[in-house]
Length: 212
Image (cartoon, rainbow, N blue to C red; front, side):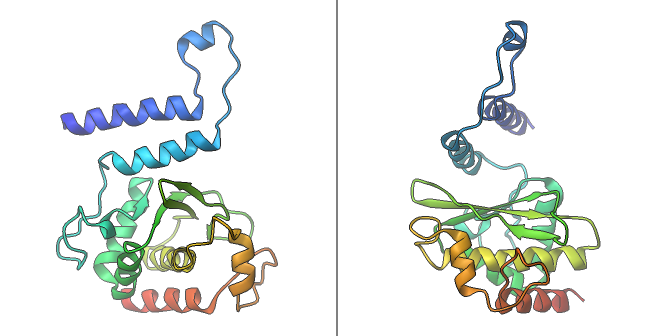
């Protein structure tokens, strides 16, 4: 409990520093709020990865090995509800477990967060990549409403897109992520602003079937 309290306090401090939340002194001095810089965001992502999480993957018995292995830390839910869904996917779906394991062999770390969706979307891989110390950070937005049997396959769909990025080291570096997906997309979306792949659709269907 003491360790969790210290971790929570450190995270709160980081959010104040990085997000530019004004302190009481700043409010009293009527100082303008600070803007978030890309460097600050990268630093926060790095520190969040290094600080012990209160919701690590419970890797015992799910085929991922000890929780300190790369596979157990490369896919992270930023809210407890999403982390719980990831853990359920790992424990109940062979396909989901394979996705997480393969991402654990790459230079990519994936953060999932609850996100307000644009019209026509329930989840998406954000089209920007942050890099720090040779690690590429990807963010997936998920609408967590609905039954586990719907949301977990949706997470798997977006993790497949993350894996498509992870398999090509140049994406997010010399190749823009949007350009990359324009190149590999092989399915026409109903929403003209999206890029889709048959592989992600197949993964979503496979996980849904395994959860039945």
